[in-house]
Image: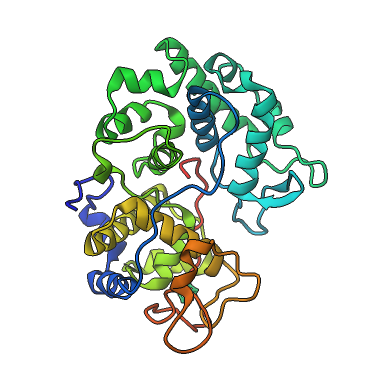
Length: 349
Ligand code: SF4
């Protein structure tokens, strides 16, 4: 599959002086992954029981406010956690399940006219958990993103994402610029936009004539994992120091890091002749379960390893117990000191 030259891929000389892709390491990871078929990218979550148009709006709203749900800091603020339908959840899992529960009975929350008037206290109330209380950080900022969507959708006379698609076209290359007009989706590395389009396709709400243009929505789990794998290498001593001390990086450094990881994922996808989205889902699922900030499965996956079933065959190695799929090729495997994703306060991701 020939991959498109996607917008976030070009990396400037200045960014190359901060962090670079390591082609040999990418090739090594790709060669190792060839042992198993790469699972298709599918979504494990269900959509709310609403019309396809409102289901699209549910994803549009959900992704717009999905950033930094497990915040960093010293000390880190408490993560977003809670219980939905008797199941304890964290971060994205709680955000999506809770919103799904609420909109099933309050469908007006999925309309641009409601978004245009949403307030911080509204969002706080929606995501309040009976046991853990109010954990959603920056509700005012998130509400501002939602109001911006409501106002712009209303001005364009679009009642749903499908109206936007009818106006601008069905190609990824047409939809990405249209999404960038919304403040929530303005990230130059397009994390939320690419994530939304992945969800729309994997939930079977949309299909794209140019799937090769759907790049990976790089999130912090993938940044952490690729820094540890060695598929990207920090060049700048200043940036290295910030990563090691967890000092906040600049917006330029944040973009450089995420663009490098984006390019590494694209390169590995191209080596394996799979879509960037397939690679994203593989990396995201593995890093968020086997390669957490404080807990790594380099030597063995514990009994309660939460890796979803379709990626489990990758944890089986020729010798030794089941462990992180990357343990034979990872430059950090078994190392005491491991990178953690960079610290940067943003609503891009
Ligand atoms: S081998 Fe260890 S450090 Fe490397 S990706 Fe796996 S869990 Fe993370």
